[in-house]
Length: 405
Ligand SMILES: [Zn+2]
Image (cartoon, rainbow, N blue to C red; front, side, top):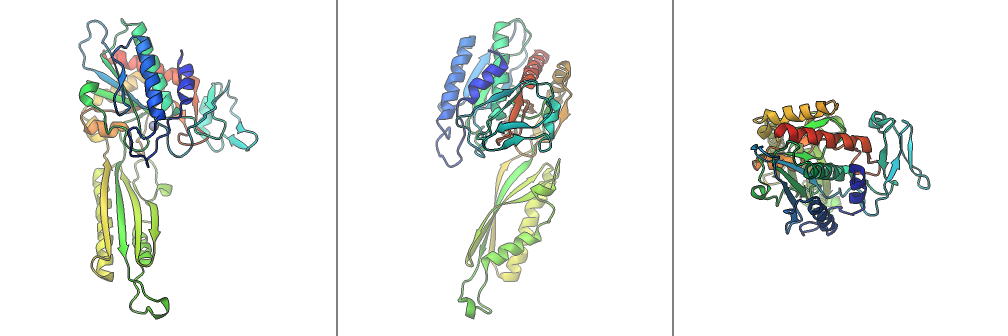
C-alpha cells in the first residue's frame, strides 16, 4: 500500500471524538481504527505493536545495525474534530488539479474556490483528495498516520536504512484536548519526538500558544422592573461592562502570528446571574500572565463599583508554549529543516495559533515539535490533501530518521 491508499483506508473509519463523553477514548470508532493500525503494524513485522486500554497505539522499530542513538518518537492522532461529521466520508481524487474551483457537491452547490482558499494554488498539477462537501475529510490527522505508517513499512522492509529506534504513537481524542492524557512516556521510550499534525507542506512549528480559560461570574439583584430604582443590579449589564473593559482589538478576528487575544467563547445570563467564558491565548509568557492580571483588575474595579463579591473570576490553565522546552534542543529544528531541504521542501517556520499533543508532551519530558502533513482546511467540509504532498512528507520522515541515526 502506498501513502494515498493508506490514507483512503483510514478516512473510511469514523473516528470523530466527543468532548461530552466521559469514556476513554471518547468514541468507539477510534478503537476500531486503533485495532486496524495494530494489525497493519504487525503485518509489517512490528510484533510489539499494540493498543492499550485507553486506545493509544504503540509500536517500536529496532534501530539499524550499529546505531546507538536514543529513540525518536513519531506521533499522530486518530480522532477527527467535532466541528463536522466524520462519518461516511466519501473521498474523491481530483487528478491533475487545474487551479480552478472544485465542485464538491453539485446538488448542494458546495464548491471549494481558490478565491476562498488561496493555498489551493500551491497544488496546481497535483492530485487532490477532497470530500463530497457533507463531511470533513480527516486529513487532520489521518494524513499524519498514513505518512508514519508508510515510513514504518519502509523501515521494516529496509532494515539497513540508517535509523535510530523509532517509537510510533497514535493517540485518541487529541481534538478534545485529551490526546496526551494517557500517554506512557516510559513505554514510548524515546528521547525526542515529532508530532506529524501540521498543515501545508513545509510547515514546521515549535511554538504554540500558552492557553488558559477564564470563567467570570456576575451576581446581580432582581427586583420588579417598575420599582427597581436603587435596588436592581443587573448581572447581565455588569457582564457587558466587564467585556467593554477588555481591549477591543485583542480578539481572534483581529490578531495573527504571535499576537495574543481574549476570546469570548460563551455567554449566558439573567438579571440575577451572568457568566462569561473566555479563552486566553498568548505565545509570550509574560504577556500571557498580564492578560490574567488585566482580567483580575477589571474584576476588582467592578467590585469596587458595585460592591464586594459582585464579580468572581476563576482561571483554568490548559497548556503552555512548547518553545520553553524545545529551545534547549535546537538540533530537533535543524534536523527537521535539513530533512525538508533534502526532500526539496521549503521550510516555513510558523507559530501554532493553538496547541498540539506535543505541547504537553514537551513539558512531560519529550521535546516534540510539529511537522506538516500536507493537509489543508482541517475541521471542515473544504478539507483536502495533496497525494504528492503526502509522498513528500513521507520522504521528509525518511530523511529525518536517517539524520537521527
Ligand atoms: Zn490535528
